[in-house]
Every structure is written in C-alpha cells, then in structure tokens.
Image (cartoon, rainbow, N blue to C red; front, side, top):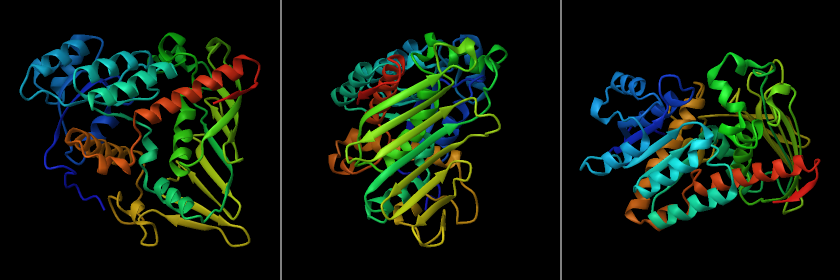
Length: 389
C-alpha cells in the first residue's frame, strides 16, 4: 500500500508547459505529481499569455523569475541553473505536443505528455528514438490505466483464468457534446478544430484511453487489422468525428470493437472495457472503478472490490486506503506519476534490470495510440474498409 513515503530518496525537480488557470487538466497533473512528494514544481510556462501565466505560477508559490513566457525560454534558463528542472509535463493543445516533447528531450529533460503524443506515427517514432538517444523517458497520461483493478485484470488474464481471449469490447461514449457546445466553451473549441487536434476528435481524445486499458489488460495481443466508420453528427465539426465505431482483428484470432462518442446523450462518461475469454469474462467501468466484474460461465457473477486481500499483490500495491473507501481518477493519476518518477530515476541510473519488467505508459504506448488513430482515419476516409495495422 502507498502511504505517502517517497518512491525515491529525493523529489524530482519538475516544471510544466501549459496547465494554467484556464486548463481543464493542469490541476490533476499537479495533484498527481506532488501527492507523494516525488516531484516538486519549481518552474512553468503555464499560459500563452505570459503575464497571466506568471500570475498563475506565483499564485502556486513558484518564484516569479521561474514563471516563463514560453517553453523555449524555460528550457534554456533552467538548463543554466544548478537547480534546474529535471522533468517537464506538457498540458497544451495537441498540435504542440511533438515540438515541445522534442525540445524537452533535446534539453535533457524527462517528459510527461498528454495524449495524443503527436499527430503521426512517423513523429511518434522519432520521439521514441530520441528517448533512447537522450536516455530519457516520455510518460503518456493514460490516466485510468493507473487504477489498481486494471492490473488485477491483467494478472487474472495472464494466469489463464479467462482462457484464450476471444472478444474485447471497448467504449468511451459520453453525451456532453451532443450539441455545438464549443461555440460557447473555449476549452472545448480547440478540441474540434483540425488545426489543433489533427485528423480526429473522439478517436484520439477518447478512444485511445480504453484502447490502452485493454492493451494493459491483455498485453500479448496485437491488433492485426481494423475497420472504422466515423460520423460528424454536429455538422460544424466535420471533417472531425464526434462518433466512431471500430472493428478489430487480433493476431490470435480474437476480435474487438470500439465505440467512441461525444454525443451519447445522457451518458456521464461511459468508459468500459470487457474482455471475454473461452472460460470467463472481466468487465471494468470507470464510473464504478472500485469494482471489477468477474463472470465465469455457469457460476454467479463475482464483484471483486478494490483493496481486498483476495486480490493480486500487484493490485494491492498501489492502494492508498483500505477497501470500501472509493479511489478513482486522482489516485490512478497519482499512481502513474509515481511510476513515472521511478522510471525516470532508473533510466538516469542506467538500471536496465529494473526497467525490463516495469510497467508504465511510455513513448511506445504513445506511438501505438497514434498509429491506431492514423489507421482508423485511413479506414474511415476510404469508405470504412479494412486496413492493416
């Protein structure tokens, strides 16, 4: 169980690009990174408006001279300091991720980046290679993948309790954008603008989350080919989709489906993953994250509860309080940032043995997500045809 003791013998010196006062996601980055004192926020380029960013940074307790107008200035100035930052989180619109990630790695910094990592598989491949060259990591914030019951499912599947995997059903389908809310909401507006988000909306913004959760649960399966159909029900969003269906075939003969939507009226969040084997099934839903359904054919449904002693040790290790008390998104993100800190430290020490079997969503996970979206768009734009992955 995590009890607040630092994962390392010190706190990593940390900065942020984006994530300012108007950001939807900045606070959860700061909360997750600093929760266990594995990171200390010392610098930031928080806002495209330098004055507003400086005011926000100082309100967080950061020295005014370390609240920078832009990331280039921050990277250069921090590199010149003996106490300069060692890692940076990127919480900016999607079209900036590749450039900022590349600049951060070239500045000798570890990176935590919002997804999608970039727009093209070629860009993602370049970043993965640059990580190896610079001996730094990129962590990608597939937030709920840090929840303990995802790892309980992973262990149960690895132990063969489901038998051969046959079907994986994934969805992330909420209803909050059933109308053109972006006309009044600036934080939504850029998400449906191809200049900022690239070739997709819900495929990249939503679908890659349950896709990675499924990959975490069933890491030995690879998508062989897929077929995608996408729609723009709010017509002003075209060519970006606000609804999409994807069918997939895996290399073991299993099949999968994905439903991503922002127009599923009445749904609060709607992120679910169901893995079906020849013997049993597992299902996890992020609106009830502390329960994992285990359904063995011919037996009563079992609800496995977070924090209980019958769970696998890897699922219990990331608990922050005993069973019965709910843990959710903030705890899952905190677990990810703890893992990012451990991976950064091991990378700096050159501890390949530790990193060999250590799980965290890294640059390769970001690459696979970008490649999947790229192929989905290719399939849909060709008239919903099968394409190889």
